[in-house]
Image (cartoon, rainbow, N blue to C red):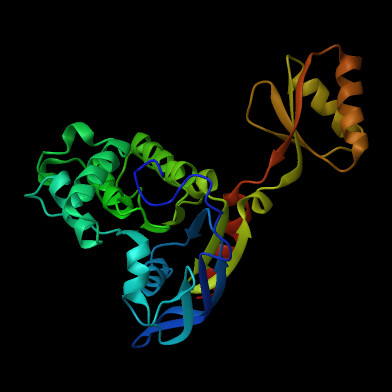
Length: 324
C-alpha cells in the first residue's frame, strides 16, 4: 500500500496519458480575458505552472477543479471532463488554495479529519490518515493546537496536508511557498518533491518564481496574460549551454588573456579563480588545456553550464509585457 495508507499498491502500473488537457480554453470576466485559447497538455509527475500574478494561473486551476466554467473550449483532468464531471474530479484530486482560508479556532487534526471524511473516508481511516499526513508535513507535535496560533509556514503545511489526506491521484498547489522565508520555501519544495516521488501523486504547482520550479519540476508550462508562452520538459529547457566554466588554481587573468588572443570569447564569472568561455568548437577545450599547461597553472575543472530558466524565459516575458 502507499506510504500514507491509501489504496494504491506498490507495483501499480504508472499512469498513462496526460494528467491535464486543455483545448482552446478561454475564460473572460466581462471585458477582462483571464485565459485566451489555451491549448496545452500536462504530463504526470511534477508540472510547474509559471506566470506573474494575474497571468491566469488561479483561474485555470478553478476550471480544472470544475468550480468555474470556461467561456469556451474544454479541459480534462485524469480523463474527466471539467465542465460535467467536477465532483468526480474533486474525489481524486487534492487542492491547496493560495488564500489564507483556515479556521483559527480548530486544530489541524480536527480540520484535516473533517475534510478527509468529506472526501469519503470512514471516520477511523480519516483519523489514521490524518495522523500520518500531519507527521509527513512536519506538524505531528503541533497537531492539537488551534490553527490561529500557527505561523505562516505551519498554516501552509496544514493546507498541504488537507490536499493529500485522501490519497489523490493529482494535487493542484496554488502558490504554496507564498509568505514563507527562504528556509520555509526550501522545506515546502522538499515536501512537494516527496509527494511525487514517495507517494506517486502527480503535482501541478503554480509559482511566479522560476527558480523554485526549476528545482522541483519535471515539466514547465509558462503562461502570460492568459496566453500560453511555452510548454516543455525542464530537462529540455535547462539543457547544456554553449558556455564552459573554467576554474584554475591561479593565473586567471593570464589564461583569460591567452584565450582571448587565440580568438575565444571570454567573460568574467565574478569568481576569484573562475571565468567562462563560449564553446565555439572543440578547439576551445584544447586551447584551455594547452594554455593552462603553458602557463603552469593548475586546471581545476572545465564544466559545461546549464541554462537557467530565468535566462530562457525572461526575454519572452518582457516581450509579452511590452506588447500589452
